[in-house]
Amino acid sequence: MTLKVNEESLKHGVLTLVVTLVEVIQEALETQAVRRLEGGDLTEEEQDRLGDALLELDEAMDQIKNDHGITGSVDDLHRGLDDVVDEVVDKLINPERWAEESGRKGDGGREVQ
Image (cartoon, rainbow, N blue to C red; front, side):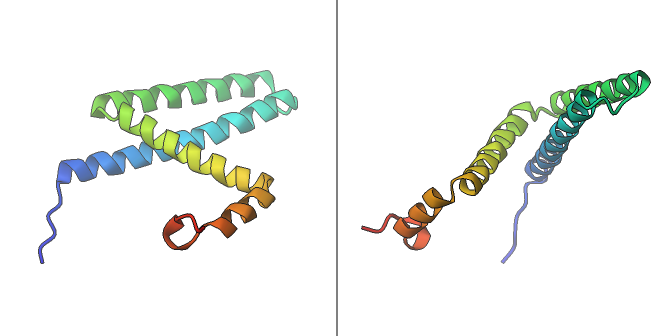
């Protein structure tokens, strides 16, 4: 059995995944930067350098997405990841609801009556 792989599609998919992961990491860095700014942990020079670095990263990511035509794919994947994270956080915050939902589900995620 021969596996046929569309190289362009594979490259597009891998690049989309990598760019999306970099954006997720970027968001975490930005959140951490805001905490450090609000905490007064950074000098004015460090604030400027951090702001410039984050802005350059944002511009570079936009350029990569535009150059390779993956803006929509990255946005879709990012939304999907956000939904997964929201669900996990919800289950951590509301364990009773999670336990209740788990009790109602059978094999394959089908509702059990």
